[in-house]
Length: 100
Image (cartoon, rainbow, N blue to C red; front, side, top):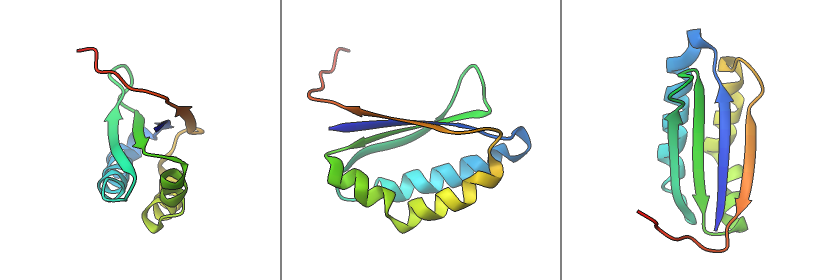
């Protein structure tokens, strides 16, 4: 499994527009083959920080997502609503255990 974590610092004046774009992206992404989960959240300490948590079955699913029309559209549109550089981390996970 591959887990991705994106952090998007959004302009406070554009927060709702950025959240709408992220919600639309998540909804479309959850329909992709190989996507285990795709969630958008705001940071409890900084409501102008949007976090996206993504889980994929494998690298092919990640690549397909990155090349999807809805992701490419999001990339083009979100830039106008950011207050800084986003970050994206990838975690290659060998196993997962529910602890609670």
